[in-house]
Length: 90
Image (cartoon, rainbow, N blue to C red; front, side, top):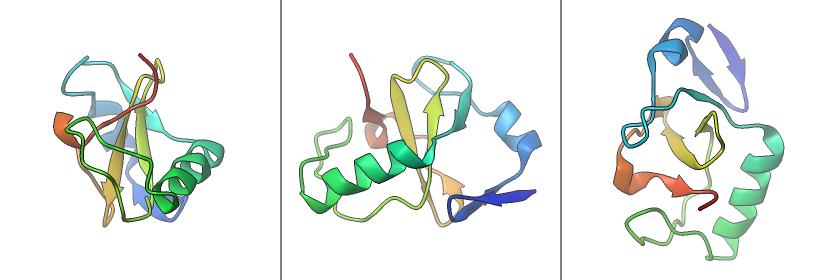
């Protein structure tokens, strides 16, 4: 395992994970995206797929390989629920 962006994920586990909606593989978000989304959270302008305004800063994210959706990592556990995903591009 390795540590990056404040969370740890086993590379073998990451290879098995996919988006529950699109079935696309997931990868770790880069620091720039994480900072950008955390800024939107601090401004109270970021919503998840279900329309809930996010209020807690993100410690990590997994993003679909096409960059369309992101899934928060909470206490080192990816929250792979469609309603908790963040739509990045339409």
